[in-house]
Length: 434
Image (cartoon, rainbow, N blue to C red; front, side):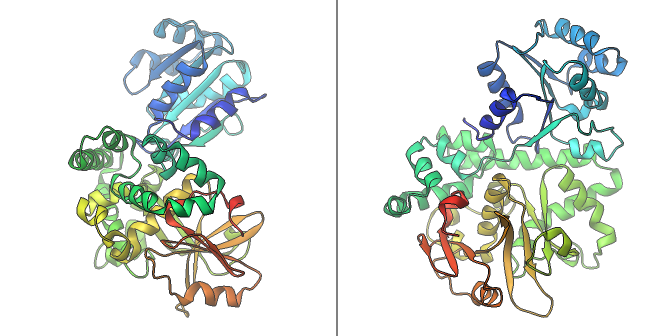
């Protein structure tokens, strides 16, 4: 299955002054697959090492030595001559060997013509364990679950992808029924590659759900294996609370929804663990819609999102019928699935997201992002009924801004707001009349 990040990997390969690359991302989002595909397609040779299973490769970095000696040892272990510019070296599960991460500094300085990529599922956790990060000596990319565009590619819908990427709104409107049907499927399947592959191969909706449940169980095993023992119950409690938190009218994270007497001090480490593992994302509230957003953050108010809409459906035991038949998935659950869907899509585009609300007002803007040095307020509506005073009132108070609404309505541009259909959430901002 094609992944959008492939083009970024190509750009890295062809860039002058290239540094070793770190590919971040949660477990099972497809890092190993895309790196093996990239190595086989774009290089004459691939030297691939899984550091969670290859004890000899780990020993090379633990013993240390010169960069030349390490490369010679890796060549011997892989039975692949690692030569400049025509060989890709991949170190997978880098978090299992902290010395390998530290060695990237020396690869950058002493062997710049060796193409090396490392991948880590729990790298954020390792860095909190005292691993020395090679600051200024590496580049970074992050791989997310498959977004809706990648899902359409996997479903063999390249024409739809082209229309969405170009923002051809007149033609898109004619294909609305097909796109809504595919969006329903995406809400159920989500973007975890194993689930998408099972759906593409028509193995059945129950097989998709079985795969999703297995992924969730694997994540829970990671909690027990990698988290401090005292934090494991709290991590499970926070993780389990996310669907209910997002199904509230006010989606601000509430500690008492995790545990009756819950307080920040009790759960902040658990939340940070999930964030470091790439399983959850925190969206901070800002009290003023101005740039830079960081200046206006309220650190004690945030929303917590999980990494994939399909996994949330599995956690909530939402039936295939509810997702695929009728308007339930859009009209019910107070827009929980739709807000998570929009969040994950924009996140996969690299957008930094915040939200806006104040304690003394009922006005809440679901997301704020930055585009071309401008603030873009975003409203998410799960239905065709888009009546809401929040965005209109907000723009009335900030007439210098123009709003963006994602809903089930077709594309429509007004002087104060642009409506974009949910299935076109990944249309580039350049194609929208902002």
